[in-house]
Length: 161
Ligand SMILES: [Mn+2]
Image 1 (tube, rainbow, N blue to C red):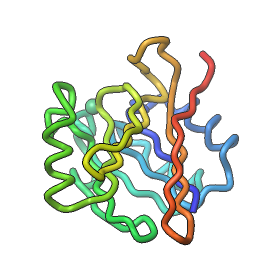
Image 2 (tube, helix red, strand yellow):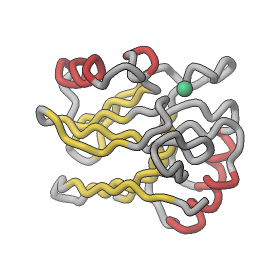
Image 3 (spheres, helix red, strand yellow):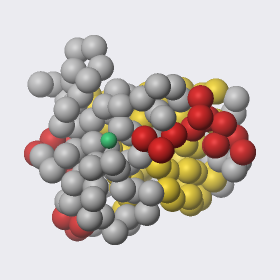
Image 4 (cartoon, rainbow, N blue to C red):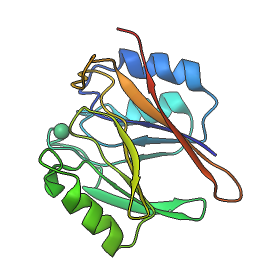
């Protein structure tokens, strides 16, 4: 199963459509919040199921603040991150993920990509396709592959500016 994860597109979706064209076919789209109202259009364009959460700028979103679902055999927790003080530290979110317990925790908000394992939790933040803030400031997203046997394979990918 190929999963495209993006976040913090803030209503400027040109890069999302570029990425979609490059990465299709995908099986699932995950948006970690702050689309600012375009999640339905993204889902339609992707032509696959989408999981999305509301970010701190999604005032009228029908998406939940948090979501939890299975990716293959892996319990997955999805949240924008601001409710877990993610700009300060990943610690609160990590503790929540461990308490659930979730194997994968997906978040956004910082506009800085993260893909790392800690205490058995895979922490994934795709960064932002619109307003990247990490060093070098390249728009970023994540491709996550979940094999039939549950093997996880993940990569932060970048667009050239
Ligand atoms: Mn945000």
